[in-house]
Amino acid sequence: MRRIKRAPIEIFNLAFLDIISCAFGAVVLLVLLAKNGETDTQAGPNNLSVLVDEVLAAQLNVELLKGALSDKQQALANAQARSASVTEQLKALESSVPRAQQTLQQLQDQASTLRNELRQATAMLNVPTSTDKPSAEVGGIPTDAEYVVFVIDNSGSMVSGAKWSQVISVVNDILTNHPQMKGFQIMAADGSFLYPGQEGQWLTDSNTMRQRAMDRMKRFTGGGSAPEVGILRALDLYSKTRGKVSLYVFGDDYRHADLDRIVTDITQQNTDPKGQPRFRIHGIGFYRPNGGDAAQFAAFMQAVSKRNRGAFVGLAF
Image 1 (cartoon, rainbow, N blue to C red):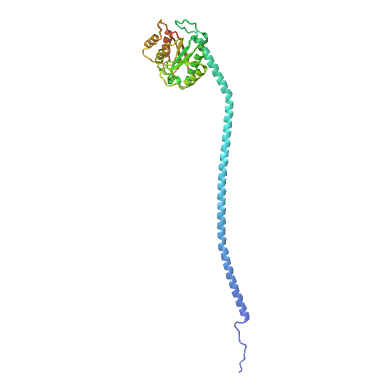
Image 2 (cartoon, one colour; image 1 turned 90 degrees about the vertical axis):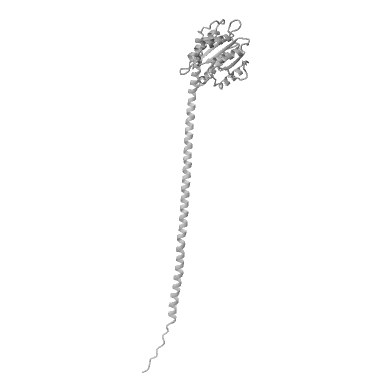
């Protein structure tokens, strides 16, 4: 039998190669696409994290700015409140000025009334053995002295509060009411001087000197309550003064077991060769309701004044 010859089969013909080529190209394309996609996937989350961090940082800055703004607003509110308070205080002070002026005028009127009452009261005092006619202008106390010495208790009870200002005011009034005065001196009850180094000398009377002395008296404090010490020292230092001398003793307290002896010693030292008192010795007593012994001081100075052509006046703190 004859074999039939058939054409040989070509396994790798053109069509098959085309298919293989296309398939290989597809695989390569898929690999490339897969790599690109992986790169984008990896880069995407990193960029997002950075953006999130930036957003959080921005939010934090915003919160900080809000806090700073709140602090500034609070400070502004506090400043406005303080300004309003100061304004109210200023208005209150302005409204209180007329009341203060009215109160000051009332106090001045009361002081003037008190001085008038003092003059009227002391005008009724008897000044034993006095040959001078008392002047009604100064409450019965002769004001013909050419020299005046003040012996003032400047202890704590006399200088506390507004008391010392009242004492200074009385001193100034007495100086003003002596038209013939040539000199004066101010001592503490314990014998110390307002002007150390001026012992035995006189301060020249003038408006300027008076004002300086009144200002200096504001700091002349801290002594003791022993008026006999200052009196005896003044009598010793100024006994040879030519001219009329008046001695004013200020106090609010005195405690001594032997008043009669002290009064006798003062009277004897103040007696001139003719048996008459050299100085007029006046007493100014300040009464305080609590503490001390103002009555004892008053009794002491009334006895001294009576024997030395003087007068005693009592005032209330």
